[in-house]
Length: 228
Image (tube, rainbow, N blue to C red):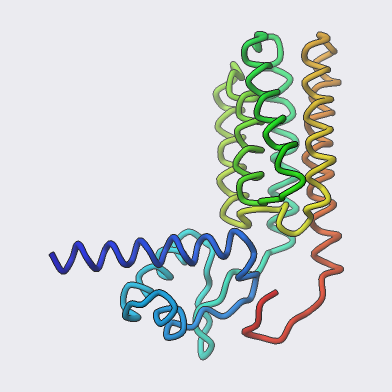
């Protein structure tokens, strides 16, 4: 019974901290102090520590000697390399998938994009990111090349380990993203050349990368331990 209760509290702490990292309430470099978090959640520090260790295993939290747990800083090089590679492989996978996408699949992608558009007025970066992945999944999952598809999946997994949501940093990019999604769908519907579809999907990914890195370079610095 005690173990179950402890697990339940650990799960609660994991969800609570994770949601704040995703929403950017706890930004990169934010110091996660056990005591205040435990007090906020009305539990001991033990399940909080377990939750933070789990987030560390997922790459969202980093432990530093003499400092403790911090939200992982964005590694610019790793992010840029991942986005560049993902743009290449996802663009190719989308182009190969295009002839296999029927109107039902395209309508499903369009419906997801419409939901993303409706979020723009009351923006929720985490939900927008989840829908963004759903949209792209519709377009690349039918890819007949399993090796290429595996590389796409690997890129998405690596990206989520670096940063849950680019759009938390650059919410203004979300509007352009929705517009570019519509353009990609139009290209597929019109039977555009595979290379044109591939370049549209690739450049869509790379524009997001550029917007994120620009925002990262221009963001104000905060004192250690504070929100960012």
